[in-house]
Length: 177
Image 1 (cartoon, rainbow, N blue to C red):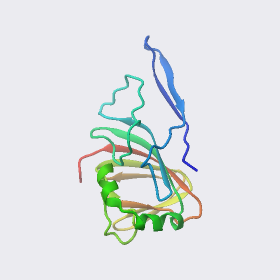
Image 2: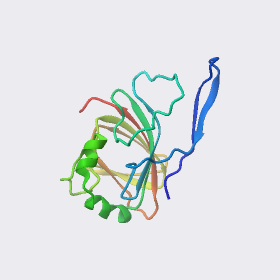
Image 3: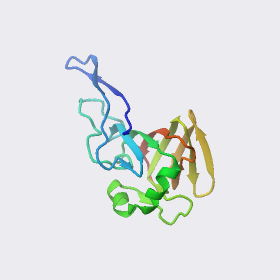
Image 4: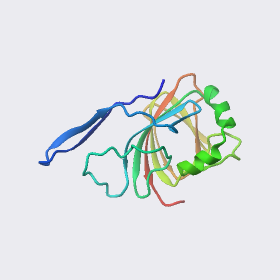
């Protein structure tokens, strides 16, 4: 089943009064799901400070992992158990996807096939289930309510349980470390 998240977005009417402009369940365009992992972008900004004018949906574009330059993205990802995901990760040719999506995949890391790196500060908040955050050196088990601040590091996510893990991410463009 595709990941479904209700999104409610506010804006302004012609008189400058606050209104609701979106109340929907965003669809996952192609490229936002692989190896059983599903991702939904809920909002995106393309500059800092963000521009709160207009009512267009800034997430209506092909998937890319990092946020826009000088921007941010709010994304929810659902990770299936590794036993369902791992073989597909190892078998997939990631080079074209990584280049298209704008991140660096570390195929040489034998610990997990999902190791990758982006130039962003990522706030990861576990909403449901449990998942391991893997670094080149070490790992931490995260459970619902835990928060990781990831600062442009090579990393992977490992769900060693029998249930999906749902994680909310806020990705903010950053200078490379």
